[in-house]
Length: 157
Image 1 (cartoon, one colour):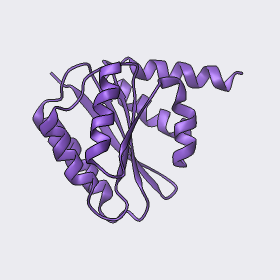
Image 2: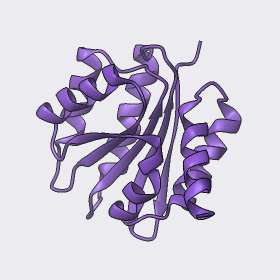
Image 3: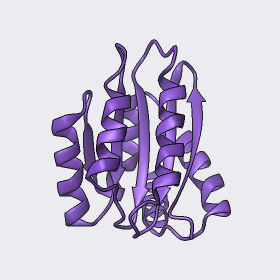
Image 4: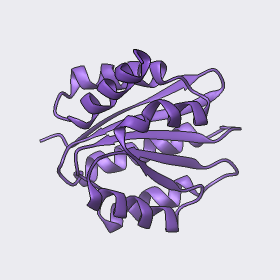
């Protein structure tokens, strides 16, 4: 059973990835494919790369986190992971990952999505478009629905 889905994206000169993650730990083959995509995205990057992650509670195990950390720490720009979740355990996993990987990782409530995107120099609409395309292919992640709801609420205020 598939545990994650991702895609690589670009907005202007900013490269980023979007990753949807179920409540299950990723299968190693899927995780290695994601790590390869991060490496490919970092190759030749002259600006920081961002990984926007919506998770329902699944997280990579320690070995998988080390595989990703080894990749995001290469080169001069690195990849910053931005995880959107309401799960307290996942927030602690993100904090631990930030200790071993530069430029780090941070956990955010889904309601903070628009502000985080602005801080990264991409529009929330662009990232949401990519997430929505993934969601159609992989409808099992519900955190994304909370992100979309939060963005729509803020846009109508």
